[in-house]
Length: 187
Image: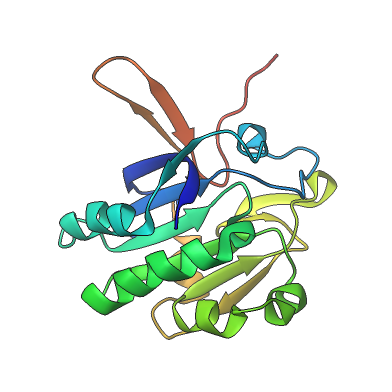
């Protein structure tokens, strides 16, 4: 089994409370207008990894990260791989898990294996991004989105305390912009 990944960030502060390992999955049939990550929509883009190898990368950082954030693209279009990945994380660590999806909570609950996903997730943020309802705070991009606290790991105050954006520059000069309220180009 493989996951199709757009990119990862091993230490992010703008994608959930604390320092987090973030996986942006590749492929999204929802293609919300105004999406910050349109490069993640192509289902054939990105690269393939195994859930096992990705979990190993995350677990190697245990003690230096607080949790894992799964975003996209649309993560639930790769439900089997996500469940395998999160199962490995839960079996081997106490890392928290946040999952973003463009599907509504009701749609998620109707999906095959949704009970397994919910059991492996601390916070699930659901709903399509709607540009005309943009709020960009507390990890919520637009006001129609719903936040589901599935464990007692976090509260709304924890999400509200997450920085709205981060800009990282790698040693080779590559710039990565991330977060719920990233700086936008003036183009």
